Length: 367
Image 1 (cartoon, rainbow, N blue to C red):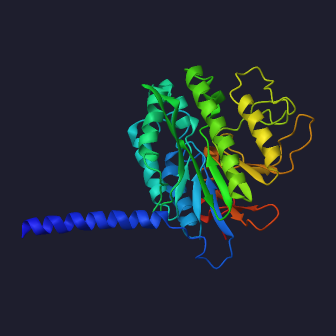
Image 2 (image 1 turned 30 degrees about the horizontal axis):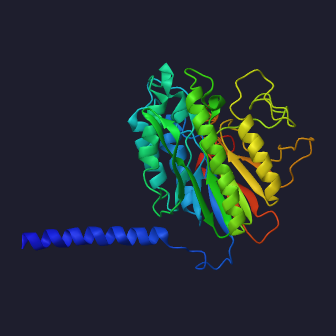
């Protein structure tokens, strides 16, 4: 009797796993009433304080869960750049930080995607963050968040993964499993591990060897995404990364200064972005259709068109999107998200609507 019960339990577990995978793999493109249009949620650079971790982000997740979203993407940074003594929630790069983040992502009803942020790994070697080995912390993130070809979240989505061992971990070459791609209703999405802190070329312990390998991997994955999108006839591409690489000479307070024609950084800092931006520019021009580039890093919500060609002409089909991010000085102020309405049949494909979470309003309380 006990043996039969154990076998039945094992069979139930296997059946459940098969059912979950079938649900995760199914294509809902033809099952909605909206004729192909849908909404996604974008957020990042959160939480940076106890208040944000305990109140702000849960409010934000509840707000996203109250709306019908095809999926969500977090564009990096699970904590502040430096540890905060006395905090209740994790503020250094200990394992508890990633456990907390995993709980946030799996609280989302829709499939939840993410890309790493510099505060999660490149800056973990700062003494204030616990003095961890940054490559080891990235290896850990790969294991916690990217160990399967599925997204996180209560409903999962299968993604294509960069499995070639082009990146570097603490013990040598490893697959860049954080770099992902998926296509939903005729639009291609791609995540890339592109970091602040000069893309790991400055700060406490620069790692040019790691940068060089990952940079080439990012360029290859980005080019492959455009090739795949062209082959599929995708209406648009959205790229999600963490770093604000700087696009021109106008943003001295929030991003690297860059000659918009040559894409060379002009502020004397190590340039971890020029080669990638040059390759991206070539692909954007050749693609012709809408390209959205989503990032966090500088904590300033904006949607604009800063990318230019080598003659200084604006790339009309390119849109930079920076999500809301931490503003600790104002409590929960700026713990908000961006809703993107996606309509592959429309000329611009993406339209953007800020979502100011009612429970996180600080300066002007909700009515």
